[in-house]
Length: 485
Image 1 (tube, rainbow, N blue to C red):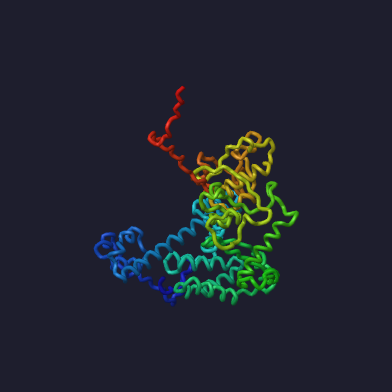
Image 2 (cartoon, helix red, strand yellow):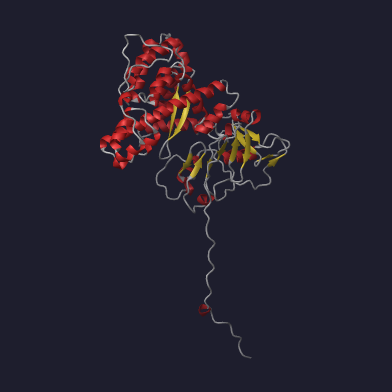
């Protein structure tokens, strides 16, 4: 980005007569033409870097014809263009938020579909847009001019929701002069310092607000691992770590694990025991469970296809197979199939990885589906079927696509919907259609269409039928000849 300019003010705020106005270099830079990008690429890149870039001129630049200096100028120009578009998008998002302030028009849900983000992310974007076009107007103007990065603007927008208007203005004026030249890490630290300086709430009030934001998140990572993050009050975190350390201390002299490894394993052991406790609440008549789908060909030892862990995705077969069935695995990893109480439920899967609804018994004359139908639907669709929603199917409502009793309680007529999207289906003009390939197509009141495709499941190995060997008459044994009488 460029060095920090003088802070912009709202259009209705006039500067003092003796106040020095910041001069934009673009005011003194000739406007390049598209033809200049071909004939004089470096000069064009420099001009675009110092003024509001044009997408057509920028796309006309050939990166291979640029010098090192020209390439850096082109990067600056492209970053400014992205910032300008991001600032304009904030205006669109804010207007959408104003039209649907309470969410009862379900515009925010369509925003999630249109932006291809989760519903929670869309709500966060709408909240940020309201701040950036409201109390943080100056911040968004700097983004629109290409001086402040959109990331830094979002950091500030996420830091001020709990602050008063006066404190928000002080924090903004404090951090923006240097923020245009700072990395996100530097800017985040500056925002924290400014909030601590100007926010005069007592410590109890601050903790009460922070305590309301406690949560647990599970982030899938590479190599079939995951990060579980607990955001807790200090006393709660101390209880958790004390229990983990105490459980991890149970070790013998032959235990070669490190302390960190023992603590990580202790969390899994504690939670595994918790799942075995009686009285845990059921969903759809099903006990809390860890669902893994694996191809039957892998179970038979014919291949080593990845299994599918509900809530994570593909995992190696060695993590899902019982120890007695593992093929080429050396070592002793945590294995889901070896946990106490592990059960097998088998479903037919076609060559595209979709569970088939061919069992005529998967129908009930009752409104509430029995566990055998519920388990089938949950394992088939895996999440709420509204596009972008990641709510696990096991915690969703099982909705009759054709309302009961006109539609049956069957695997074919049921789909999982979280409460929010169940209400959307029944109390708005959204329309749902199930496609022959097993996907779900939604049509919104704005006449846009969005599709949810259930994750593919492990598929059985398709083996070619063995060829019948050609008969060679020369290899036939001599025919039996009856003895002469």
